[in-house]
Length: 367
Image (cartoon, rainbow, N blue to C red):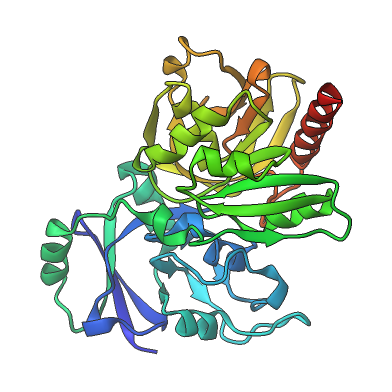
């Protein structure tokens, strides 16, 4: 393995060992530096489209120890910018293992860095916030990297890059409902959850107009997770605005933020985001606390909800941020976290059942 380093835009340098893909001309593309606190699920993290253009620091010290399995992919190919770990296991041990982490990252062109103090780096992200960074081979001067980072502009088109280019159908064994999913970078486990409940899922590109979605005659609309700033895809918020009240709408993560924007609320960027499988969220409707899986950089501004019909249904117990919204009159609800988990706890799977109940009630009203 070749020596490699991480350089941040504020001049910090972390020297370690490279793994995964080689760096073109000795450097990676700039990425946003973030961290994830999950102890397992690195394959799902690697393949989650919401990590597009991000360099993910894993706080758990050993990554790759059970390899990668064919059934655990969340997308066809990784979109993240880099994976940064304390130790990358070269010899995984698991009966489901089909490939090593290093081999997979080489195959998909994802560079990695191992052998650094990820605790120190994580504390830096918590103290100073997410920021631009890049990987470089040992012979590339850190000053050259800083010059590149100083002029680099982060892209604002992650959703178009990870959204499907055409409509795709996903059929369950026994279809009961038809869900039109606006795919902004949807995880495969969301599709699996909906199919397990008897939903035929029609995945449409992010920029599909409302009239096209209405022509599908679906029973409900799902707004998916995805990468980046929700304000970069105003066409999705406009589609949501035109569809709400016509049939049940359920949003997750980016979809939650987009639904809020469709009602005139605002969003803002968090200092370092929420990423991990252990975030406590209080359900204000039941008083119960759920342990949730999260992956997002933006949040809904609670102060901007006053002039909207939306009510807050869930809050994050770590920082008080908005984690759930609802407008019963429009049959709309959303959550900031990931009830489909993968990886993470399954405390919030009931939300898919709530979506089913809304579609059943809608059917009953129309009879």
